[in-house]
Image (cartoon, rainbow, N blue to C red; front, side):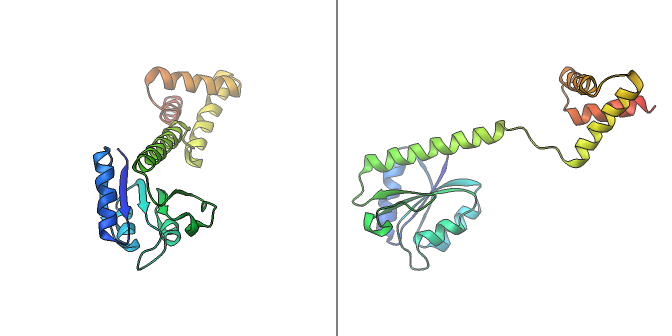
Length: 182
């Protein structure tokens, strides 16, 4: 479930947005009346969405957006004249007066996009450190020298052993080096 922080300068606006979102099944973590409060809550979470008004007593929405941690997005609810007809970069905007359906569907769309991005990041292969790459290269060199394998054959051998044993390639390379250097 995505964390939602509601931040509006007027407490009654913030509470009514929170109530709409809660009735629609969203998890509202906090209701804030200043940018500093919203940032405080956001810093304690990994990711989420801040539903925000245009201005607070301590900052405007753009300053809040710039200070949010990396995993956060912003949904700005304000008069179209506030963003001068073009949406600010990295901010989804909803015009006032606000329609409940627009708020709910926009937030659902943002959550789905955030979920897709997280899934895509998890599926990307992890980069190996120089030490890990060096260890694999050393194991391949030993296999090539000792068993007369080509570099591709040595790589495939480590890869297959890794899959067969259920370990990663670095652990398998370490085992190969240990066994050959006995």
